[in-house]
Length: 75
Image (tube, rainbow, N blue to C red; front, side):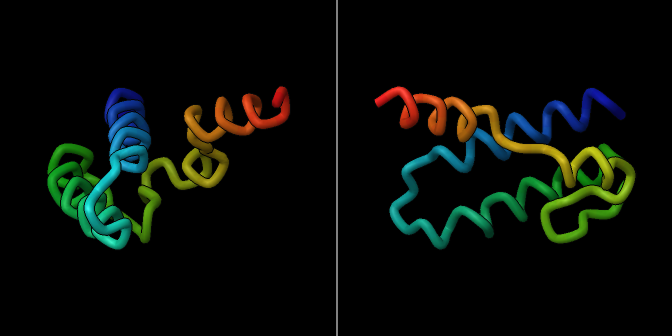
């Protein structure tokens, strides 16, 4: 299960950084990934979180966002 959680976090980070033509396309794209991932995880997708890893998902934050915030503080 941990492997699926790691893969999911990486996919969300990558999709979040994409420069899609319309930013509003990002959420539907992630939902499509979630539908595909649900069959592998055997878990319910709950608006951006997974039922089987709900507690750790609530505490998750993107490493990309953390690096960006650190870069801004240094500037």
